[in-house]
Length: 117
Length: 113
Image (cartoon, rainbow over all chains, first blue to last red; front, side, top):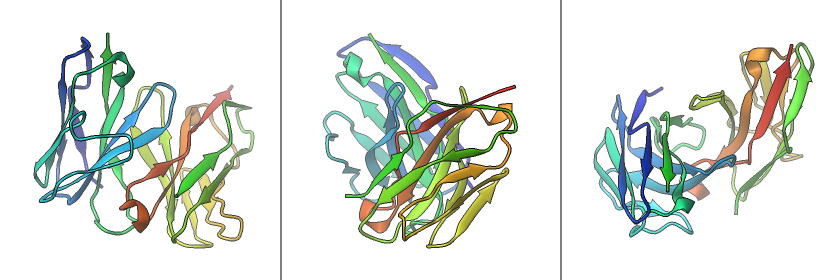
């Protein structure tokens, strides 16, 4: 397994501003993912962030809005840019300690609760 | 593309009742299947998994069997407890999705004393 921490745990932001969310893992992992969970909804994949390559974004998510950094095997950041109230969600990072295998489980951070006013 | 369909919630049961939460999937490849649980105010936790047809995943009294013929992975527990109250998510992963998880909408379970 892996222990994952996220900062901040929650924030209230004004529209038009940006927030950077940090994800720290206690071990080196290749595959890291960022998800969004809108209120009362399921989790939707934003992007896959593998170290050494550009992040891969899912349909409906773009780099200008959600830039991602992955400087090493234990850390990643997700920025929510030019925020609007529709961005109010829980943002979660997850890791797959055993890479490249569909059966390998993913472990999730505690999430960052974002409210945009 | 791949997708996961779960039964709609909320599900309300009395303590010691039998639980079934239905989950069916659509996938072009050979996915692995998972159940995750989100307790109130907590993060998402892996509950159980199965990686191939006829595999049975089990944990904490919960079970689910990977049924390829019916493309299903129903979650069951013989006797639920109040502490099982949570939201349960069925999910799949395969190489087509780059091993990211594709989640169902979640089923909220409330167990009353």
